[in-house]
Length: 247
Image (cartoon, rainbow, N blue to C red):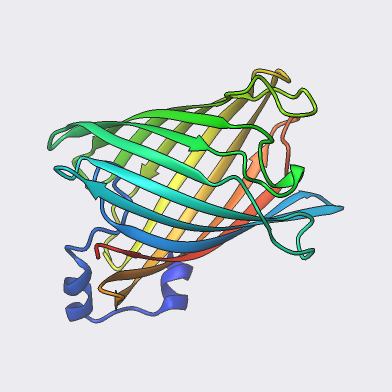
């Protein structure tokens, strides 16, 4: 993080105070309106790279403890060959418990079978549920482990391949001295129940608030990731993005 801060430059005290109260999106129980664009490059192996471009929009409703998220993906397989439309999805988010010390939420994401090519989606209507519990630690950091289940809703795709995957995620947000910047650590263990394969992953997000934009608070971020284990489906990934929150 020291190198990352040096590259971005150190803000003045006034700038640090300006960003102090801004919701930067790292607290999973603090829902806010946000929209953005992100691109992820995946190194599957030495002979194949894939890309994924996503546009997303999240809107809280009611008392602010619930939200709807829309995700519009475009797949690039192999990378550089051109974008094709993927599986459009809608996510319902419900923060059903929240105190000063902890919080919990449930999400359900529905993937529609809208991909233009087999490599751009699941090949079937699919769902993904998640439940997480967040602890707000005394040092200002957040620890929010989660269980995520991804499953097909049509019994398989055209090739007869079924979808049933469990992910155990251990999301952690350290409290940084400079509130203009943020980091998250996201280690996970993934098990594919259909192929009986298990592997691990680690993604680290580094972001910077960029000031007012489009009626909200802009930020840029990068997210490098690595997969490990004998059954891993890829080697590494790198994501870059921009989003606006709190508008």
